[in-house]
Length: 106
Image (tube, helix red, strand yellow):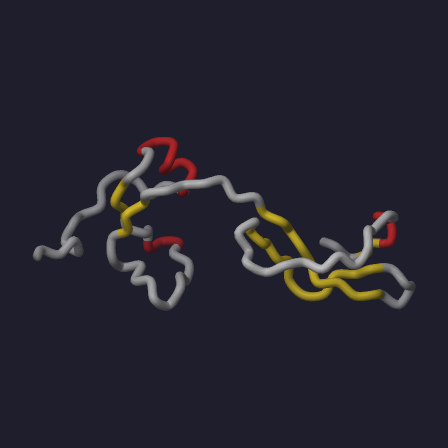
């Protein structure tokens, strides 16, 4: 059984959406080292990957919040981006009817 590790890359590295527009699926790729992010521990990003399925994912942007000293709502901590595939569930608390009560959401 021969290894795929010796396959040389060709062409310029592209962002995912641009890559899919240009080449379609399925494709065998290598993750570009110049802007690599940490993947799950069990995934070896040094090995070639088979891209075989794409889907559009809706995202929800969120912030942890708390009350400020004036009774408004202020963000606490970094912003979160939750994909629609997030396995957790939400409990409804209340609807924010007055956007002007939001402070420090930069």
